[in-house]
Length: 422
Image (cartoon, rainbow, N blue to C red; front, side, top):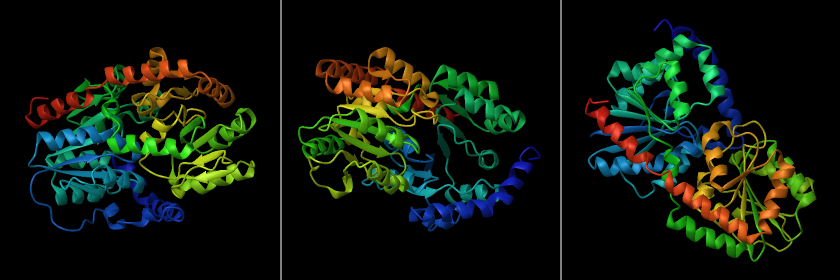
């Protein structure tokens, strides 16, 4: 408790600023003000029956959790799943993924104050918590321990950079991790870093994101996208981050032939209009995916202003530049591109997915580029080389296939925790 006291005081002091930030973000994304009471552990209705709680902070974690959630639903058909998030885009993604599953309920996780965490747990009374990746909240995990709720950190990853940040507060980090019942780590390096910080019962289970397969609807939508694009070569810039789009647009305008189409899909929806303005400022004719029409032959940039359709964008593209890797954001998930057989070009910054990135390059499914200009040149060369593109696509599918199985291993660990054997 004493270790968490300064942390809790900081939360109390920061709460007005957190609410102001929520209002600020709601200017562009009004959904941030939806279900506001849930962020303070005020939830409608009563909860009855057995429930397993899965926390997936935003879009990436929610999509990664899909295979595991479906495995949980199948393994325990009498249980409901509470899927919690911190962002409206994560919540919307969960709603889309489980639209036909009545046993999945959505909610926001409250802010990390002890009284709110306790209220959350006493309202839903989960018999188990599964937290995806590295969402480590000290007060929440302490409350889980007090309330007798075992918690598993699933698909856990911890970069060297993040490990150094946690190591600045070794006692608090060790105490927080010590409340976990088990950890399912993506890689041996992740497992080692978590153990060094004090995590108990660390198991190497692999990356659950390999278990995500393209839904039939996404495959059909990819075919529609290809029809919309006509016979043009499509270069995809996927899940780009702030600052990267300007670099990509400049390189595209300078290097790409006029018949090449850039499909540009920003990571965050609140930035769609800003990215459209960047294209306009460079004199590049732009069309939005939301127009739901065939792409005009004069269009140079097709803006992917939609959510939950990344598989379809990958399926429609000839080559994909992976966002988050061109500036020091740590990269975005490249597994979906490999799974559908789309060759991948990575920038220099992939520390959030380092092992997967290295493995994809070694497997012949991805290429590494030093900067945006060289990445654009490599992508355009691949678009002009169908044989090499096909070889990389086949290598990507094989790479994704051979690494599947993490969901089953994580499910086995969950069974052991519930049975008291972990």
